[in-house]
Image 1 (cartoon, helix red, strand yellow):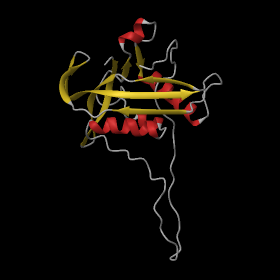
Image 2: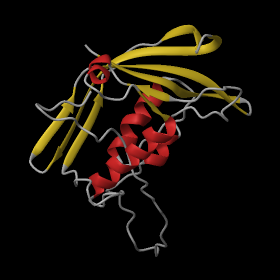
Image 3: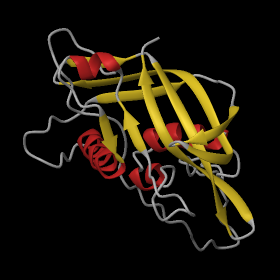
Image 4: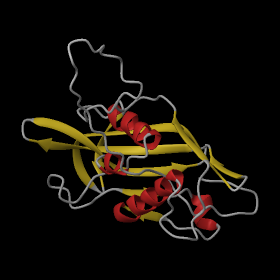
Length: 203
């Protein structure tokens, strides 16, 4: 939950496309130097923990494409449901939304990162001067069902988080708990995972 005395924060999490191109031609005399800007450390999605890792890295690198890869789509395997984000009850009680569907989450994420890059999607969106996200370490436990249906190889974790956004000399932040529910996806012979549900809850 993003907090600010007397204010409601409309900007909600995550990212813009950065493209990387590599390659050069060196003469035999040229020294090969380390890249001062190494590519982001994205991990494969063959274990649930790598979803959390890539989520944080995608925030750090303003990459909404990589962020979107983490969220369950209806055409991922045989699932009829797709990712949604659920706000904590305090937000709902004060007139806020209860859920964000996948499309809305990705749109707001893209808007956040456009603003963080200094190129807001709309003139009324403020430029974000600084932001950050941290998600605490945690453990996973298996869950037998999701959406009222049996779910094999599905997982749950609850983590503390801290997120802040600074713009126009103001600062909003959230520092509560987020619950992730993760499902397996079969990609050929490889099983990967996606975030199906994210719940924002009070500490």
